Image (cartoon, rainbow, N blue to C red; front, side):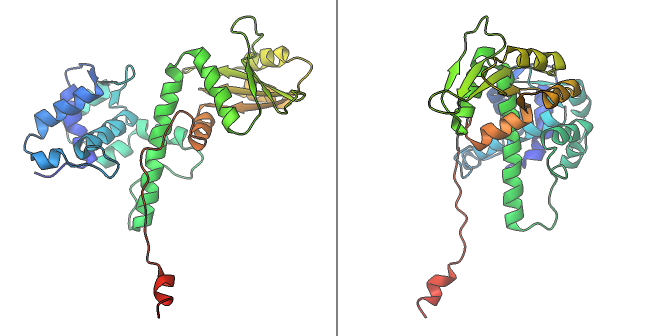
Length: 294
């Protein structure tokens, strides 16, 4: 028996979850192995990826990720997995990678998460090894950003404010000052662009789940900005409705709006809340070496 490809774990994952039980991710992985992959050898079960993960667990984890994007399973809380009604319907059938990628939930996820790209990710036909590497890194980046956004929506609102200030600091802005947690007039932090604090940027951070930031929120933010600044940054884990966007655009102040997708892009770029897991070396022939020795 060969180690399954990640898409070959779709049905085993759904079968394990079919009874509607909520399982921890690690418990799910083990149950899938115990129920469907007992014929794998000890060497196969211990085989690792280049980054040091167990290969079989890595494959099941990616299968879980795709099923979640396709709407077949859900994460009711951090670290736990549960099947959806859609997943129960498909647990008794064959579920291919193409079916998952063409499902409405999957396409909606990538249209939202990856709206800046021209098309949704798909298997590259006639791709070069470099194309496959680039596509693989893109898929991993999207997955990490998705997990990062979910985490931001779960953390304490006050800690979310601190995360935003840390991000702006790493982006090269000046020292920041956290405002009081009560009676701060809607201002969560103040960035000093210069050492003397003569030029300030006011920060508002809203950790929302599905609710959009509305025009009223922007209006209150503008009202809370004192006369000593004309600059503000409003950050949210969700999105801004059209009224909020228009209010910020029409304001006499300069107000930058950062939604959830832009936020995780920036955190990913500046390594805030994430870490480098592995570094891969791609080598090529050094023609200069041989020319120097002719």
